[in-house]
Length: 244
Ligand SMILES: [Zn+2]
Image (cartoon, helix red, strand yellow):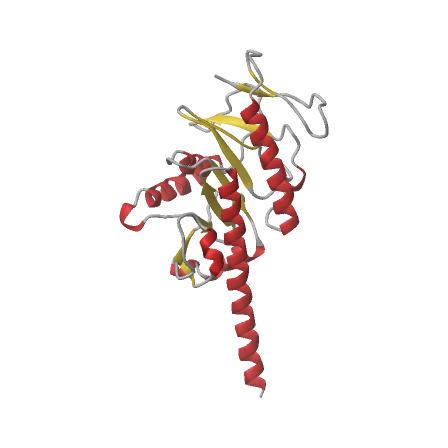
């Protein structure tokens, strides 16, 4: 089964139609997925988490066989158009012959989307995530603990939770990084949960649906800013003490 993203057929601002390649009935799930990701792009741009053409987002349309709608390569996330998406199969190949080029980081989305219970993967490039991923890369990551906002992560019920944010080295060899992430996702003894950072790059997080993945981005980005600002203030306080 294949999908085709058609240019807008005006039914109101920004609306469009997604059809099967054989002009079978409209695929409403793909249209809704694209609409949801357009809204997320605009919201994350406003927050400063997805500036320019950075970031990429995906929604699983079908798990078996894996079919995923994700942002096309090089699109401005603050102004995603209705056809700035591509539907790919489990190999990351567009299911339609003349489709746009998928995001360069498609392999990372796929390795996460293959996991049971993952329906949406969101990737951001925030300032605080970038700063912390650089600062703590030498330690392999950093702990966040004791904050009420941690309860926004799936399965966390108390502020006493300790969340380790793992940091992977950045690379342009995305398939190799995806394999590394895949190994960590398979590590039952020390499971990679909720999300991770790539050094000097950004955050990947996921959820069972778009709402949960979005919430995870909001929680992580809030906590990254808290950790970063706290470190900055502590540094400022130390500086003040030295002057006295
Ligand atoms: Zn990226």
